[in-house]
Image (cartoon, rainbow, N blue to C red; front, side, top):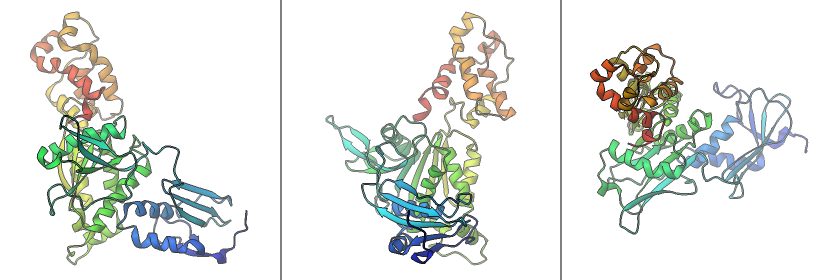
Length: 397
């Protein structure tokens, strides 16, 4: 390995410039032009924004000090770097090219386009592209020049193809879009596919980069966030609310112009469909939208999905019963109580709030005869709750 010669490098990030930069970052003078290109294009190009953030993050690995060569390889880019004895980062190269690809990127978390086409019967089909898009096509608007682009983030779908074909119904219902305005050949929406990685920092960065890129261009976008992705988006909004520029604008005594970050963020509307996870009650999501500058458009709650905290509370406020062990075949037949005990265990597993647990009296064991008579509607709907909570029904609108 060639000895490190500091004179061959230029400083691009200085330690202490903000709380996230804990070491100096240098780049080889041979690759300085590529860093400069990233600096001038990352605010308006989503792909470049993700690479820019990769480089920026190299200033935050404070505990690593070995002198070995390291590399980061993402679709279309490879960054090679090492550290000196003092812990500073020296980037040897920033390389672009199609040769830098994992063996399979088909389901990798990334930004994809979902395109409408007509099948042989003349019915619309929405298919997700195999490869991620290089940039957000924000100029594509469904309802004319002054409309909005649509972006969806799905929950626990089996794959991005299943997510792409299903989330279109969420989008149309959330924003009251008629079929004739959406089901048009070559029309498309953007899918931010997380592949189940809802809590990973890279997933949060993926979405946060997209929001900032959109705001930098001053474009209007309608977001549709479904299921477990609502928790990811909640974390994104928390990070966005702490953005230095947004905080400065909110506390400034001077009125902001029409191109401020705060005014541009308001052009992004957000709708949450069947939220799951921590911190995703309807009132919490609306408050986070307000704090982050995004425009809250609404929340749809599946009353039968007991993984949703609002749904659980609604059950608890309407029903309070004594819980007994399963007994009595007649009750089992009438209520579908064979689902109750496993449903209770599954629904309660991520929940710790005692007030929420009150709502699970209906799902903890068998229902007494007088309860079944009095609350027969809930008894008959237990199978629906099972399908929504333990099955796949929560993925549908």
